[in-house]
Amino acid sequence: MKSVQQRSVVRWGLYLALLTSAACKSANVGTAKEDFQEFYQRFLTDSLFQMERVQFPLPGERVSADGEDTDYQWTKDEWIMLKEFDLDSTQFKRDLQVTDTLVTDEIYTPGAGFYFKMVYEPIKRKWYLVYLVDQSL
Image (cartoon, rainbow, N blue to C red; front, side, top):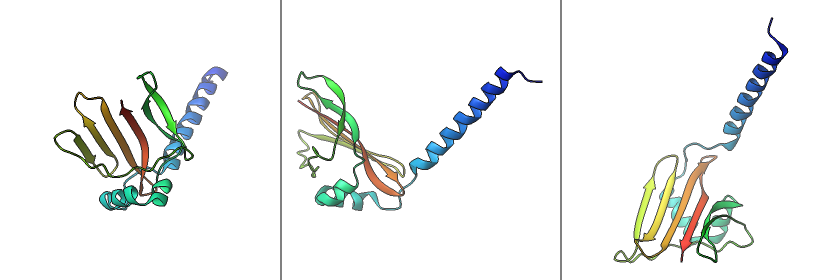
């Protein structure tokens, strides 16, 4: 016969497993049904669409007033619409990596203190901006 302590440990283990399983299913993260490039063009040109497709409060990183990187959460009230960057390829570099489950878009100037990163994930089969890094000094 198992001790009360052993049963309690097993019960808690099952409880945690159920919670983890439910959390994964409720996130609805998977592959996107919509084309990322079509989403991206609309996201950068349609302000209402952009507000619908940002997961607020949006986690990320931002350079503080003293020049230190800090964790940050953008809110709807303070959001400034993201627009397409006009990249001068002699000054800016871009690294865009697109998969079915994750897109990272990094724009930076090597050695000049500018780094901007956007991370998109499909939620309920639609693309959303889920993380932002703004390190522009």
